[in-house]
Length: 266
Image 1: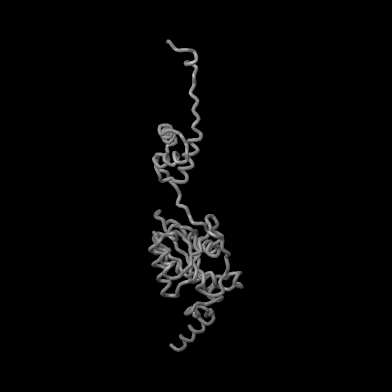
Image 2: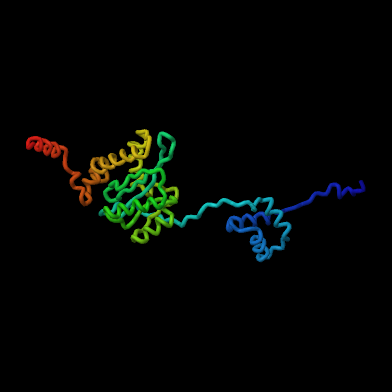
């Protein structure tokens, strides 16, 4: 064939490890940039690799495909879970999920007051965007005011500009928990457990109205009758009643006596 022995047995020795490492570093730091910027940065750092070589490695690494990258969260500082000494100091807020009997997904927004563990809201809906969360908080604001702090996780509804701007307008500080540390919001996590055991895991729901009706009944019973060991085995309303809720403390015997007296009068 007219080939020398050395040419026949020759094998190319390519070592692109340095190029691969450099492109991987740039792709991690700047995942949305393209080849031209990567190559210009490489040349500015003094590397003499030619454009064809870098482009070949770039294509072999499939970096021209759009990379999916997670949105970076701001650093969260661990904050102690302390019980406030009065109402409307700190509210805990969280979402729960379930499905209806026809397979539709349903979300439940729970809000409690950390002081007396009172359930301020147990609201169910097929969807709960940030706009709906703000509208719900506006209704609570008209009824009982706003807290100084809101403790929540890093869900998209709580990271949205709509929710953050509403808190800023009302001078509310948001206490975000660290990712993967749900017990930093331990008060509402325990509340969620009771709610799931008593409602979500106990019943089937055909529509959102059936679920909400049970939610309202359960919330009333929880606030008036559920004993908390941390509150001296008192219910939230017994431990620290909110204005206008003292009527809930009437005992069963008083209700029976009032009923009998009304019968006698009639």
